[in-house]
Image (cartoon, rainbow, N blue to C red):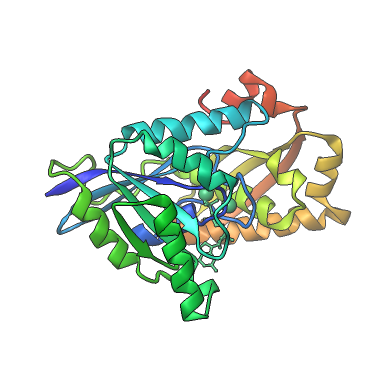
Length: 294
Ligand code: GDP
Ligand code: K
Ligand code: MG
């Protein structure tokens, strides 16, 4: 049987987390149109008759502006070192930029096979233009193998799995056959709440948001009671999270509850509080208390 680790690498917003969710066929990693959505490493497991693939989603390797940023870059570096195969994801609708040049430089030092996933092919309808863009990325990235995909539509995701298996080593499984992730349920719930803040709030606010789940208790009837805090960096941000007459917090709560109900396949009763912790992104103690293992 084949078994190994695949690191998903690429600049922010190319669709790494979306692709991982569609590769395993389940939503584990949160996604949004904003950079820095993924902060921690998220590991998921795909098992079929051919073997087992452990995917490691990463925060993008961006320039760090604070301690949280430096932590995120460290996570990505460690993931690259531990991988058997590097899966580099690019957005076909964007031009090759400084981020790709920096990544190419970094990945040149890697001994592992480099597979290129050219994502978002649904965004270019002109066949000739699409082919030209794919070719440009291939010439630039010089991968061992290439698959053009549309992660959001699960297009060519099977083909990508076939390709990854080809480059994985033979070996025993790392996880039981039915493992999809080892992330604790309450952490996934916290991420789904943070995802709503990313989707509903203006840019600068969610980048300074952390979510802590204080309580996640299963009721007798199988539902869950959840109490969570939305932590922000400033009083002004707290005001925006709550919104006029509490409207924004209500929308965040409704969206998060639906997402957690889908994940747990149970009824959820969610209570949210909003708190301010000044500049927590540069505070070691607070970073740790919010689950960033620095
Ligand atoms: P990450 O930062 O690389 O993890 O990117 P995300 O997975 O968070 O995705 C960034 C944005 O791109 C989200 O709004 C996704 O819905 C979108 N996206 C991802 N894959 C595709 C795709 O195949 N086609 C299109 N049109 N959008 C996509
Ligand atoms: K994103
Ligand atoms: Mg991501």
